[in-house]
Image (tube, rainbow, N blue to C red; front, side, top):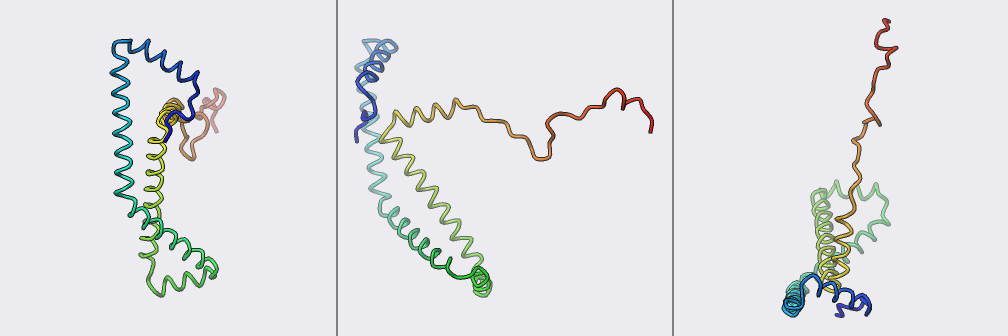
Length: 161
């Protein structure tokens, strides 16, 4: 894992100069040691997590592949036939459980992928997080709400029907 694979010499020099100005020459070596320790501990934690969860993730991935192949084979059966089979076998709850499990697997996979990205490219991950935090979300209007408040015109206010 090369931490500085996407950082050029000029960018590294700018970062070092900024760190020297912000932290100062007395505390810069200690800060570098602390950062190296932190990166080692994060890498070690990721390796331990990968080692501990590796077999479980592989079994989940294998189960997911089996489910996908089953779904692909079911897609060839007409939908009405599937509906009648599900109703006849009372599989509604099982189908719901399998869909929930598939969603959980996908969430876990996204979490592990995100963790791997953060560990392998911490500078890029930090920059992405800062970009996301700086983008202000667009306020959404509730459905059925008009653009502005309805107001009476002076002509309508005083007229009788």
